[in-house]
Image (cartoon, rainbow, N blue to C red; front, side):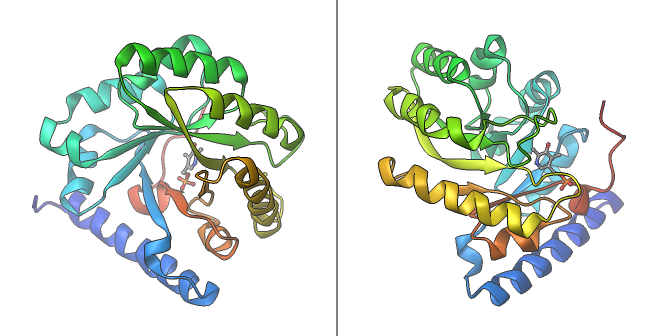
Amino acid sequence: MPDDDRTRALAHGLQRVEERIAAACEQAGRTREEVRLIVVTKFFPAADVLRLHALGVTDIGENRHQEASAKIAELPSAARRDLTVHFIGQLQSNKAAHVVGYADVVQSVDRTKVVRALDRAAAAAGRECTVLLQVDLAGDDTGRGGAAPAELSDLAAAAGRAEHLRLQGVMAVAPLGGNAREAFERLRRIANEVRVNHPLATWISAGMSGDLEDAVLAGATHLRVGSAILGSRPPQR
Ligand SMILES: *Cc1c(COP(=O)(O)O)cnc(C)c1O
């Protein structure tokens, strides 16, 4: 295990987040095993991914294609094998083939065009790609991505038909300034509707540094936490 100040800071951040998750699970009457922590490493270097790996982190999230692809390529193969890489950023269909090259899970599928592009790319790579459908909970097209809830059943049908995609669930970001708990309860209902026709779509990815407790209370199975563990990043675009 690397023994440097940065590793100690990350260990401390992880421990605080684990405490928050444990408290929220207890409040929700859930076990810690029902919730998976994805550490969002965007803006931070491959060296931090390796430190997190040494600290026992199993899942990382990235949201920018070029940064992610370079960073994942830098990882030694043993660490790469241990980690599940989640792509959580907005995705152009012309980038889909490249994302399939390094991401194990694509959480931000919000158009049938992206479904088709990912399916073709996974077929060409000879593998299956796990996907989540991103839902726009704000309903005002604020540019954070996601399909409108009304479009979801068609999108789920397309993903379900795609031979090389495994439709595993839904993902969302809480609307800015809104009530996160209420938004995540809506996501839970949407996830239940998707599961009627797609019983294997059991994942609900919700909750970030500021609202992970709300997500756990609303049944999230995956949390995407960045700044509470890695510290603050430069402002985004
Ligand atoms: C950056 C990001 C996160 C993590 O956000 P923090 O507030 O740093 O925890 C989660 N989900 C998505 C989609 C992101 O882009």
